[in-house]
Structures are given as C-alpha cells and as structure tokens.
Image 1 (tube, helix red, strand yellow):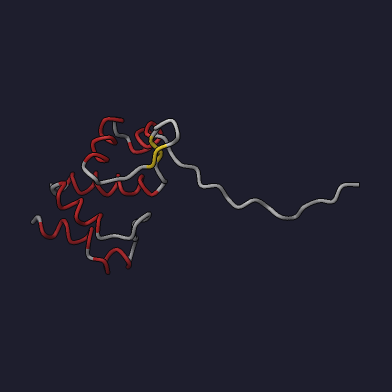
Image 2: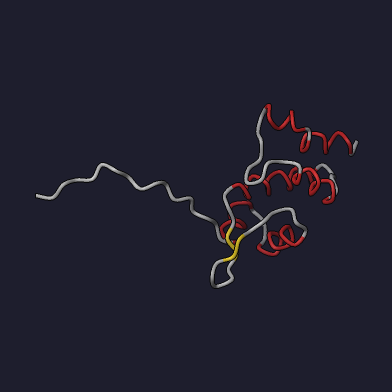
Amino acid sequence: MRARSHESAPPVRKQLTVGEVAARSGLAVSAIHFYEAERLIRCTRTGGNQRRYTRDVLRRVSVIKAAQRVGVPLSMIRDALASLPRGRLPIGRSCRASGGISSMSASTR
C-alpha cells in the first residue's frame, strides 16, 4: 500500500509571452515592444531569448493606455510608474497615497 502525500506543490506563477500580453491588453505586439523600449514595462528573457512578462504587466499596460487617453505624456507615465512598488501596482487607497498615478491627470490639466 502506498502512502499518500498531503503536501501540495506551491502555486506556480505562469509568466506571459508577448503575444499573450498583446492579446489580453488589446494592443499589437509592436506596442508591447515599444512600451518595453520606453521603459514603461519590463520583461525577463528565457534561455532562448524569448520575452516573458509577469501578470502585473497587464495592469501597468491598462494604466498606460488610460493615461494616454487623457493626454498624459509618456515621460510622465514613466516617472509615475517608476515611483510605484516593483512587481505590482497599488490599488485603491494605496494608489491615492502614493500620488503617482492619480497625480498624472491633475498635472496635465
């Protein structure tokens, strides 16, 4: 009789390909590459030199798109995103407290 293990493996955080990020965000792959070149988002590379993105990139891309829609320059978006915690975007109260993203539209009026 085999003993059953009740231990479960830790959850694996799947990274996204550039195509998956593009499809989920509604942008072209070239736009994702442009955002990366402009230092708005970051990726890692596989051993085969393929880009991989963490899921928080989807939220960052959403913020970038919203900010661009209201006329915020990319330089301001970059500065605001750089002031936020690495690896995630604050939401709700923590976003207002940081002043980064929410202050962008106020300063462009």
